Image 1 (tube, helix red, strand yellow):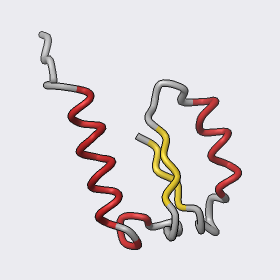
Image 2 (image 1 turned 135 degrees about the vertical axis):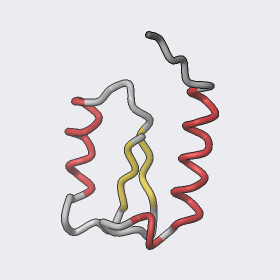
Image 3 (image 1 turned 90 degrees about the vertical axis):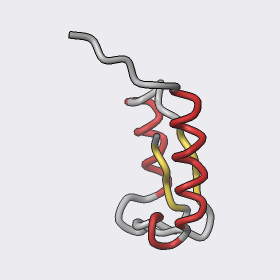
Length: 64
């Protein structure tokens, strides 16, 4: 799960394209009104995306 704040001044939103190319299987989302610390700026959106990502992944499978 890659969440990128539209107002991030540390990692510019344009750099999200690089992340998409390098991690094509990850879920990517742009968060409006969020800077570099999206979990602080828009915690409800981060939680929403995390829950959706975990639900999509399903239960963990542990192999020995």
